[in-house]
Each structure stands twice: as C-alpha cells, then as structure tokens.
Image 1 (cartoon, rainbow, N blue to C red):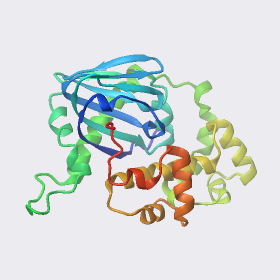
Image 2 (spheres, rainbow, N blue to C red; image 1 turned 45 degrees about the horizontal axis):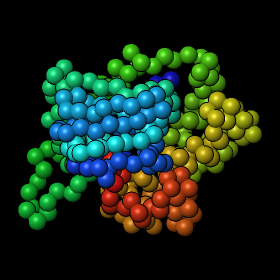
Image 3 (spheres, helix red, strand yellow; image 1 turned 120 degrees about the vertical axis):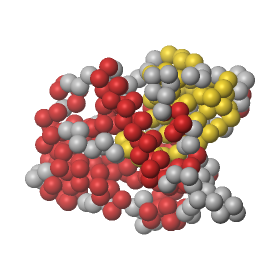
Length: 279
C-alpha cells in the first residue's frame, strides 16, 4: 500500500521564540513538525502529555495532537512543517501521538542541512546577486532524506499496522481511486471519475470510501487542496486569487471561505508570513 513516500514541505526556517510564542494550538497546526533547537528551551503539550525541547536533539511533533506550546524565556530553533502526499502514510503517522526525538550525535550530517532550512522558503538576496551555494532541489532531497530516516524509525519502533485499524482490504480495493485523487485533486475530478478508477459505481464508491476513511471523497480532496494552498501562501509569491487557481478553486471567494473554515484564518492573513511556530 505504501508506494508513495513523497512529502509536501509546507513551511520552515529559523525562529527566535520568546514568551509571545506561548499559545494554544489552532487549526494551522494540523501538520507534522520537526524542530531542531539551537539554544534555549521551550516545551509543547500534546494530548499524551508535555515534552521539553532543548538543543542536541531533533524532534518530531505530531501537530494534530498539539494542545499548547510554551516558551518562558527564549529558544532559537530551526523548524519545518510538512504533510505526506500519501493518504496511507499520513494515516499511519497519525498513530504517532507523542513527541519523539533523536540525538544529533547519532546522525551528525542532519544538523548542517537542517540549519539551511530558510533557503527552501526564502528568496535569495537579489540585491547581492549571489547564487545559492546549493540548488534548492538538492537541499530538498537532503531534507526529505532526513524526514524519511525519521519516519522509517517511527514505522519500525512506534507504529503498528493492523487490518482492523486500517481496513486494508477495503483500502486496497480503493487504492486506484485514491492514487487518482492524490494526483488530480487540484483539477477537481468528479465522483464518477474517481469511482471508475476502482471499477465501482459512484454511490457504492462514496459509501465504501467514507466507511474506510471516515471522510467523504469531496472532503478528502478539499483537504488536499487546502493543504496545498497553505504551502503556496506561506511562500508569498502569489496573490490570493492566484493561489486559489493553483489549488483548484475557480472562485477565490469560495476558496477564502473554505480556507477560513478549515484553518480559522483568512488566506491573506498568512500570505508571505511562513506558517510559523512563532506568534
């Protein structure tokens, strides 16, 4: 079932957390996070309990279970927010409900790449007219390689995969349709088109999909479109109307309503201001 290990990197960079960083989590935290503290300390509270963040370790934080983040003094941190493209990998990672971390001493090559995170999300200094020392695609490969290493460790040591929990037989039957929706969600394929990929009637496909995933096909694809929009908005290169079109929304007003309903803020409120761990 896991033949798609691609990840969507939503946003990242370097941030100096202060007491203003302290807040209750919101809808924008619905993603997976990796933090590499450089100095200072902070803490996050998940449904499973609190955890302290300190230098010397790389942390994986399941944002879907995040309740609160706290910084009494200061913490300088490199950070990354991401989601898997694969429905199956996403669902498996949702089973990770506590923070996990790895000492940098075990993987000394991680920190240098992670500390260049801003290069993936910030434009190079055009005034200096200096090229980047490394092309973004190469750095993306390095960062995704780090994430794959961490995810592999989670799959081996944290997550258990069972037929009862994942409806594997049903999902195997739906897989051609899910793969199609994963690749075409921005083009708004119809229910009949997706159902045809699995050789099912639209009504039966809808019932089977909802039973296996807990959401409707429409909700599934809308979530994919809005997650895509969230990443594009953080880059700040396109205006809201252009982001709506790039995410599969012909009507920018409908896009804005859907975005606010899911994330609790308007698209313009986060455009160009990385969906950050900061205030």
